Image (cartoon, rainbow over all chains, first blue to last red; front, side, top):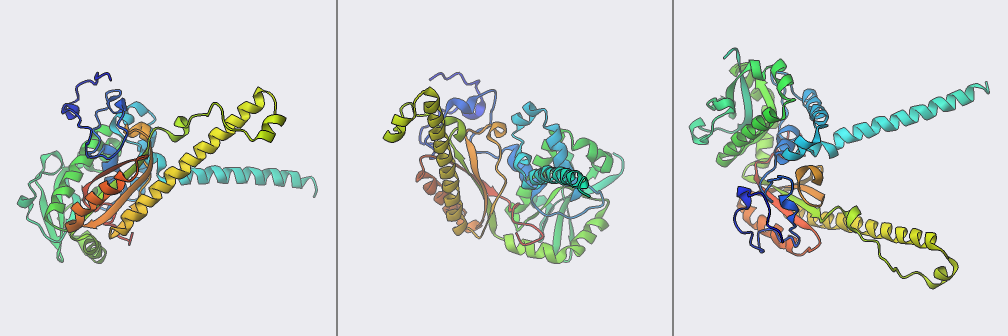
Length: 128
Length: 263
């Protein structure tokens, strides 16, 4: 056991084995790569997931509502192409956002169907 | 400060701004705009920063976003400590108080029924992780029991290799299925114990820094009076599964349940 974690204040108390989590495996992974995320407190991902994606949607006078918020999620996703920063902050909920990912899959699927259809038509045109 | 707008954090039934013990974005004092028995908690923000152009620019800045998201959440939390809360989505901004009042009138019925649904209730977040990445940690058995007939017929390392691969992929599939089953069991049990339940999109372990594969990201609405019992139940339930890690966090304001439509 190497206790070489870079002294994060949150971890300074000697971790008692019977800590709140009944999890059997608590691996040194936790203190990896300057990741100071303690096991329990809300991560930024948790907060963003809620303040951006949940709650009441009412259009204000400043129009960054509904559609724009969707746009925002896409922007974040693009921005997060520089993943290191995002990883640090624990942002990634958009990855599995069914709305976003299904839309993409939908597009891919549609694209595939259209291509198939074009081939079909091109093939068919020689007949008639 | 140039032109200012009114940033809306949350709607409740009535609250004294002083009782909130919080300040708004950029230190702006919180105010309450009332209409029709509803109260919006707001603060003034500079439209140079929070106007359409400003927001478009700033929303691409993660540090800005984090600061605003946390401030927004702190105010919502403060409101939730004092009464029922319907949190508004980040960056809901009106030009003036009249705009805020107009929204409260326009959405009054829906807001009231959202508040009814969440009054005296809190949200718990429960996440379940399978240890490691399931697909990477399943080991390939060195000597797997081959069916005798096969062993005789199939000769050569290639076949062995393929068979081992197949066994590994079977094991992987089993582990994944098991993980999904455990997650479903836990969710069902917690859903039974709560007023309402939702499954949110799983977060990616690589990016949240958590170990393992998140197989459940559940949100549960429970009576505030039962919150402790619920938390205890989560812990007990978690204790019954040695193969997964269960993390619970709460109470949250009822973000996932205070929606305009019935969730």
